Length: 311
Image 1 (cartoon, one colour):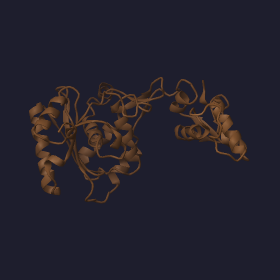
Image 2: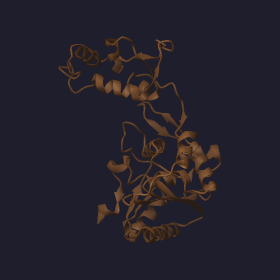
Image 3: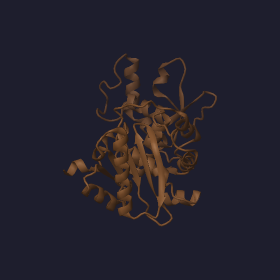
Image 4: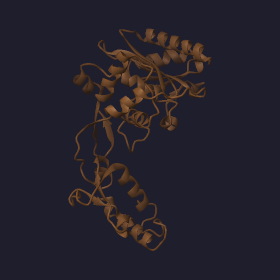
């Protein structure tokens, strides 16, 4: 059933016409209401003109029937699936565009003494993959690099070295610096070793259920889209990276594609799909995602296994 046809929606329009709240005396209290529906429709759709309006595809904003002119929206894939009960008509898209990547390369974010240091570590799973490290302070990406052929012990050692280096530069205890590690496969060993050394490590298993399961199919999808929003809002600066690393990150951010599942949730393709397209794994980009998996506006409600939880 399409939410557009729900009796609460059109009862809400009647309430507006009567000068009352749209949620007053709804036939089904606690169910969908006009305010929620229109908010999501606007968020997940594109406004079109009366000339562009396609009766078989587009819909009229319900509350606009009370105005002088009707307002038309063309539903995107999420709106089609989740609001209108239609099968999405878009097969795939890229998460990032040139715009927000270039924006991050150009923007200079001010230094804030209260910004937290975070290290993201994407541990290589296969011989051709790279273990990648991302260090950020607030929205400023301070360093990003990758190394091939590291054992889990070597990865742990290098991570501790980075924490100590940042500790000296910013005069904070090394063990207070947040470290986010992809704990799938061999990454779990790195988490265990860091935890044994009493470092503040968070296990991020990106294959698990999303923290917001209504919007995303898994945690990896959620990380990529939420970090993309930070880029889009000008909250991330990669201006400190050298041109070689910045160009490689640029390529990797553009590469992954996503689809919609039957629930209208966004699902990022597996690493293997991206690897086939660009002839390598997007390890640098994944390290950036991990670095923002903690201490970010969107990550405050995330539940991750953290050293503090087991002390």
